[in-house]
Image (tube, rainbow, N blue to C red; front, side):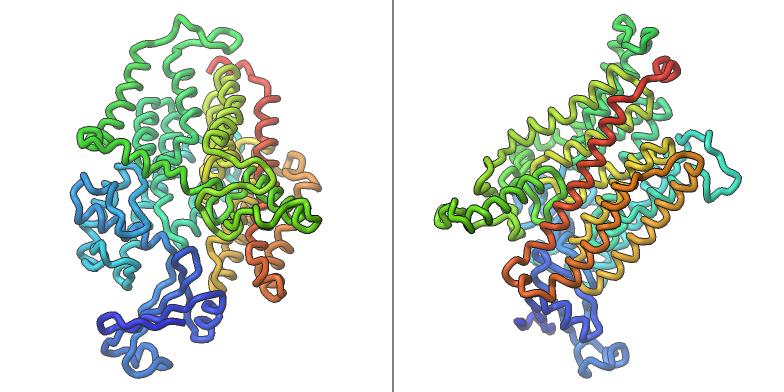
Length: 560
């Protein structure tokens, strides 16, 4: 533990795994910074503290709120956009958390900063690194809740697009009600935005609203919303192929042949021109000022930092997690049986939580170009199906989910939170067909479980388990009730796989910390979680792909 004096405050830094235990003994909860390796308490003398916290000495007052590193990330972006001219936004590097989102999100932070100054002006000082105060935390939390209003509206619009054939007498069993709960109370979105802290809610709101507009055949509105979304957060470029092909096939071609193929003579140059104008105008509004300033290369380098490495610090449960785990296993075996020279093995290990570039030990190292090629190849079948086997909005949603999953499985430096990009739109399919509901249950359970490492302190353990348990129980029970007349949503093998998540969590959170392996192999819980969840997510991806490729197009869908 280290102590610092700053003004009238005393800041205690508790380092290591013992910090959460110390805080629990004091009756406090803990937040994390710097990847969860440091916990801080700030003691500030204030009047009345003795009445509020009688167990604390007479003068100090504990001002502490549980929060993640992303609080500092967004606080820094508020400060950058508020104090600096546009020309310095993507060059400022006082903090390690530099601005690396597209310009529309930077303008969003700029707008928030003019409200934030009325809560605590000190949060807008660039040099106030790791600054926290009750007012700052309250403002950031409240801003997420307020912007979620767009997500709520988007959910309402998506529910209006749901087929009402399965209308039930009980409102709790109606597909629209089930969909509203699956979206609005999504466990992953809840913990990522409202516990860990990010602004995914309103971004997913834009995406779902664009999906709803396409389902309602309001194509230009859907295209505009998605173009705007891309300039808020560029991760949504993963699903851009689904939007592009669907708009080209359903909007630019005004008629189809009897077999469902596109009638080339019906191609509308006017419509594709309108789509092009929307994309160009939104891009000009977002990137135009930086093009004029000659800073577009700098903006691009911030948006696509390939030097961050293949895997994120928390391994996303994808193909590369399996690939790296195999490399790790082969390295251990090679060292044990003297097949490898210890002096030639890189010291940097992915499992140590590093995100820089590194070299695999046994298997060939993966480059950004290799991941791009793998992603492109994995997306192609879904795009071909959307073009040659048109199935209306449902085909578009299937392609969107497959694009999101393919990018998640093979992308470069994928964040574990990106699984929500597939889970949320798959919710719309889950209330339409039993086969999709089964895939949804597998994907959402393993995908949400893979987010557990984001909340790693002792006080957060019961919270995340209870929240996921509540959401999972509702998901399984509501979808089972919706498809009660059909065969079981999961087979026995899938059920056994999901049940084994329970002993895995018990081992990682309770058993492993008590073993002597904790100090020697601290990466084991994260490795086991990533690898086990990667198997389930890859299985769901393959099962959905097989379902789409083997599906026949009905006459009605061809006509649409």
